[in-house]
Image (tube, rainbow, N blue to C red; front, top):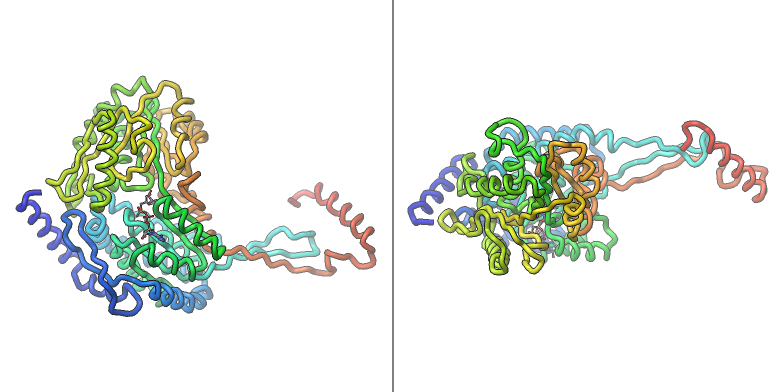
Length: 542
Ligand code: NAD
């Protein structure tokens, strides 16, 4: 980037940041960031420019122990608070997020480097999640009368008890929604929560904690300890009662082993190498047909590759296009990728932002360079864009990717996609499923019935039809991964119930069912056999 442009961006960042959020907020957040002080500063960078955004105190394992202790003490009263009151706090948080969205949009962009459009996905997700769980939590958590062991003789209830203190370890790519989104479900279920955000992005979640305090969440119930995962992770796992982890599959495996040592339950949302299948009858839409209405596979796939600069767990990195449409669709997609607005901006004018760090730029560049050196053809992009900022990388489409190239199977986590031609749908499905991952996929076709049949054969936790990921992600249906892409589910009923223990309480009435009066063991067995046989035919008994 030229010195004059760099200064312009820095000035813009500074001006907008100061005007909309204010440095005072940063200082307040930093004060509450870690328990105790002073601590080493954790410096947070602005990926748009490489400059420093601010710092928060770097948490230590002792901070984690104290934070879990404070959370545990606060959790008792919180769990005793009626669900309706807990839900009301969620709705107030929802309203505050919408009302103050400009602040969190700035923060997400400044610490993560993504475009405002992509940052807005996080605002939507947090609001939708808060609204949904505010409305369904009472029903999900209500004690349920269950069928007893023997009708009339027993009454059985299923209760949902909070786990206690839930730990949330979150990544940098969607720092707001992947931390507070899970915390929302845990909190409304009656848990206290300790969040360890990624070191690159502590501010978004600190902002969320401040809003939750304004919404009326009692002190202590939500704790944030920023710092290194390798340093703080073991202390969290040693002290918390449940763990929600979002991050790489490699870290997930490590954490699962540690959690096994204490037999604490966990859910994990991990990596992906997400495919899209474009069938011959895919709705090409705007760019190809010159209309602005309807589904555009070109636009949808371009979004799927470039959203969050490809640093989205559900991004498309493998594209399978049927022969009949390949020669029309692929050039149109390449053109779309070349012309998407890209650059550092806190406005709504660009679609593609920056990669988040030097490490990301290095990894994405290495994948692309390796593929090109081994014979892949670049159809769009392929290069870093230092003229825009230190970590920008062009939306990239590659053809001719083969097994010996790193990006063939490994997650790139950048705006880079390999496109493959296919003739036969069975062959495409086999290639789609030939991966250790199984997070997200999409199928593009005008024939929704056929696309649904294909979805049923895809090994992935979410499958969008004529949609990259937003329709599945933002729904009230569970979200998570098959195979190495995760354990458990966020969102929907399972997303809340995972933060609870089921407790069954049964009342024995009239006589003990383990030994009926006046019957010896043999007669007891005979009478019970008859009773069980009869129950098989009584309507309503399951
Ligand atoms: P990462 O695993 O390196 O880090 C994620 C979090 O774990 C960070 O907070 C980090 O500090 C912490 N951490 C790192 N090592 C740890 C350890 N030993 N113990 C405890 N915590 C530790 O992941 P990343 O590279 O920062 O994030 C990108 C990855 O996350 C990608 O693979 C992406 O696919 C995945 N991801 C998945 C989802 C999903 O919903 N499935 C969403 C976003 C990101």
